[in-house]
Image (cartoon, rainbow, N blue to C red; front, side, top):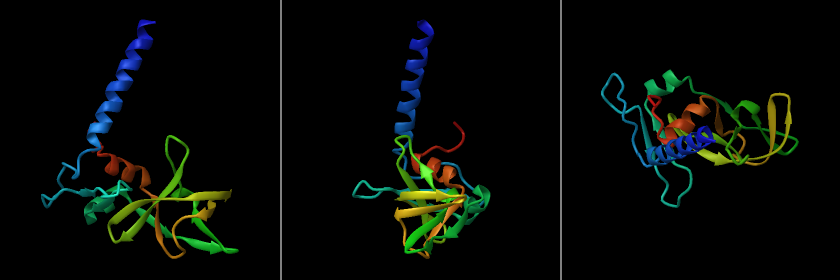
Length: 147
């Protein structure tokens, strides 16, 4: 029984630490030029934050994108662009401009091999992150990787 209590307390400490880390607005590590590699701009309406990465951070994280497509009137994205949260909700990161990313909710109708067919999500032609989304989740949550 004592072990279960220890795990419970440890879980609360970790959860509290992650919550505090999310309050940060700028990543603290610096790149070769002395600039922060990422800036997190919190949305005034409480929506998803806007993440701005320097070119070096994009390169180091290996961020890759693909274009939202259309098939039979439905939007499609590579399944690699779909991210699930702890509650099972689905979303993706869209590239709003070079090096700038923002999480956007999506509704997946079906998955066909490596393609997700959407009922709702970004418009066709929008760039979505297919590689590096997990790292962007960490950036948005304020996790620097040194934890």
